[in-house]
Amino acid sequence: MLSWISYLGLGFSACIAATLLPMQSEAALVALLALEPRAVYSLVLVASLGNVLGSQINWWLGTQLQRWQTRRWFPVKPAQLERAQHWYQRYGRWSLLLSWLPIVGDPLTLIAGVLREPFWRFTVLVSIAKVGRYAVLAYVTLYFLNG
Image (cartoon, rainbow, N blue to C red):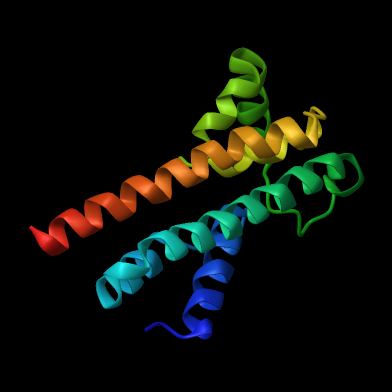
């Protein structure tokens, strides 16, 4: 049985991984699934909730971007911001279904805040993407563990 610290660590890594900070949560999920395959539903839930929360932080940062954009410590370069904004304007809110992708996903969630995507719609679309990604990863992991 996994301890609450395992779940806390997974949720924290998933949250940070969804922000603009460099981190990965997939390895943590796979490792915990290898230790306790029966906990698949709770692990996917915790990872998904943490990852959605991290994306919501990005959305909020996007709503505040004009205030901080000129600061030296701000992690998004103007070229990255422009590329993500172009992508979002081209494909609209449905591009949030790609928020699970590495490199482009996190800036998309930030741009959604910049462009004032309604929070409820943002959360629904990002949740679909994040839960889907972790569910597929869990399925593949358990397939290879049991295969």
